[in-house]
Image (cartoon, rainbow over all chains, first blue to last red; front, side, top):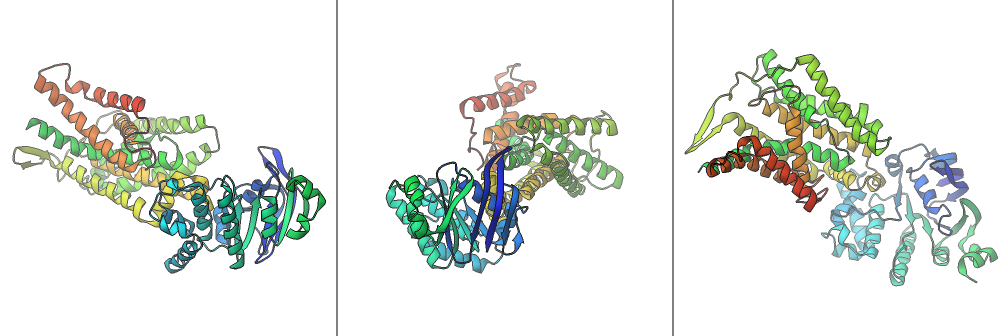
Length: 234
Length: 295
């Protein structure tokens, strides 16, 4: 469904991603793991169209998308849930979610998606009329994910959903990701929680200083010596 | 009674001030850019209504839609031909870019129309007034106030009750997040300039019924609009409304106060000093304005 081939991405001239390739097939949960500064977020932002690759190609459903605007990429069916969450603070939870369905013109479809999100995160339903900015960190993360689901995307990209959350909430968040996968969603997940995310995933890629250094199924990667040493502290 | 009269006159004028401030606050809210040429947009709105009514022999109020259209087009053209390019430059380019636009439009008007002060001589409402008990209200000001309120309400409704308006507010709150929702933020910027230019064009078309028009007329009004926007909170729609009305009242009450006290110092010539003093106090004590930013 998504094929990223040999991309290079620069931030004001300096390459942050040197050479990354990856593939996501329909219905898969694919993780990209790596330490801080390995280029994980940059990779997702580039797929989302917020950054332009200087080399390589990004193909989604047989169409080159690396030159498209973010707005057009959302319309193709890829949504990006940013690491910083970027909730619209003064707007209510429900208004935030409705903005997630901005590209939908069918009110009925939007209502259905809203119900699904409330079903996935009942906490959001309880707080639907509260301002987004007044939610706790965990609830804001739920809102960000919920908002990303509102357009019923073909591919959902999650950028560090567990960042800055307390352990109990981290589990809750990863559980929600697992449930989404079970419901048939295709997900590209970027995480610093290497073990937890690889355990959930069908396949994984390990990034180091802007290069893919390993890839394989979640199990394979967890059993790779280098990964055990570098990330799992074994 | 004289005070009550001043308050009523102040509210009427204040509603027009609010409409002038509306465009400034929307453009700032969405783009974080101060449109220094806003007063010149007003001036062009005034000239549009003036020339339309003079050349087509219609009432300036009927010429109002042309002011709205010219204002909207001016806003959109300014965005696509100038501001869009300024966004790629540093902050200072954005600051001086609209300042340059201000100078260009002001002296273009001077070149085309000269420095004469012009006023609409005849019209349905010009020179007529409405007596309500002890109060005498000029029909021109009354209709300007009512239509300002109407235009303001319409824009408020657009921003708060429509999908397009919500997208515009989302863009104002966080451009990056808005783009992840699939919102074309470039178009939202253009929309902000369209609304900004259109509303101030209408304000100009209303103002020309009772105010002289000349190439630098925008200066006085844009200064008041800056004060309104600072007082109400940058990017705040409600703020622009109430601040505009408050400033209108200060402007009318101050000379009356001077008259009652019998002090020459507090005369009408100082009325704007108080407005700008209030502006100064607000900026120092409550820089977020009465309603906070971007509400």
